[in-house]
Length: 119
Image (cartoon, rainbow, N blue to C red):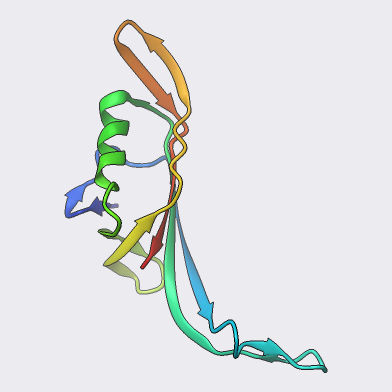
């Protein structure tokens, strides 16, 4: 598997990687009628990628987080729907990074989670 962010291979591969295919509907024209039928107006199909990591050294977690610091950035990833590697523009949501343990000057972070959503 290959994952690139901003054209650079990710600093450390995640322990969990999940691609969700999202249908985006028009909020005003997608409605249920009085008989319960759905009138749906799908306006786009987008991807969302969730990644989780186990223990990471400080330099690795910093590199991963810095790779996502722009508002939007290209991500290359294996797409389950197209059956090939795709490069699309994403943005990142919250990035919780729980502290694990410190030994001397070395800090390990455990449980970094990121959710990338296609622009």
